[in-house]
Length: 142
Image (tube, rainbow, N blue to C red; front, side, top):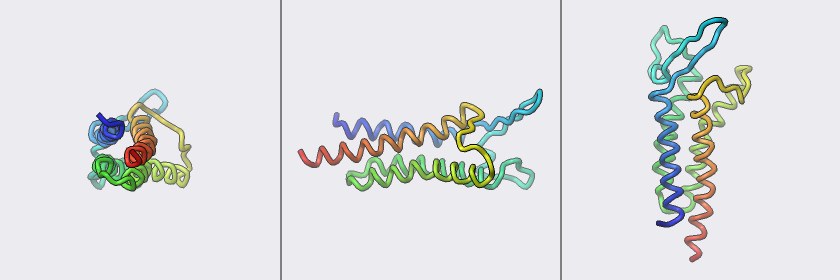
């Protein structure tokens, strides 16, 4: 199996796992002596009494869409597709960082395992997209 195929499989697995975090993950808010848990899937279609901010709704849609799009882009044979997949993987990270700063939150504040996975999986996939670009270039030279 080619090196690029292994990297493609890894990118696909990471980004589909990040998209799955939206479907099964929960946001946990901790307070003095209590904690509240809200499934992220509820943020996809928030009702009028939803506790999710509109920025969270955009973030979970972006993560879900980028998970599927990056998985598909990684299988396009052209080398430019790996760079496009890298941008798609990083889009949710950039959005999260910008909105955290605008809302006065710490960019690196991680309140639970789901939030960690929703940030770490696309970051790892973006790094692998760069490795995929290099692998495609090497295979093209051979």
